[in-house]
Image (cartoon, rainbow over all chains, first blue to last red; front, side, top):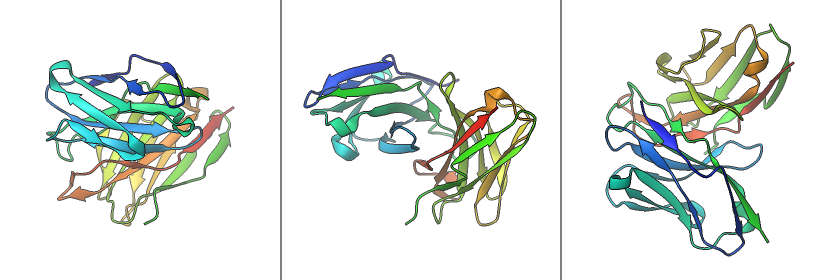
Length: 117
Length: 116
């Protein structure tokens, strides 16, 4: 069964500092990979996705993520964090070889980001 | 284009009651998925519907059920509510091509269900 691990439950950074959120997955083949963000009381917003091709993907709000097959990782980065980035971040995977027959997102437990002024 | 909408946004029910939640997908999206989010278990997949058929199901008891209508709108129902059913229920819709999901899922704001 596929699984997603986000090792950091809570991260605190200062505004303007760089950010890296870790994500590791367990899956037999390369899955589709996603990062979502959730602000308090809100649904999930897609930040970026990796399906295939270039392993460095750019997303919205200045975020990027790098897929490393050898490490089964898909870490999220941002060079300079803004106070509005404070939220909970979820890494997710979906099987890439199933079409519609077995499609579901499996999420990590999330990383809560606090931004200090 | 309007996003995924869910109604109601908040709901308080008593143990033993049943509840129905509604989800309207983005126009043109035919796949609708449901997720339960709780502090303890995180985000868990409930089920996915396409063309009025449930294609995928997560590990939830039979008290959790759903359906999809011909206009792709979906409802989920929870019968005989338990305290542990208190959660944020999220709906997501996806584009499909020939029945295969080819794009990412777009989430609604969720329905916050509290069971007392």
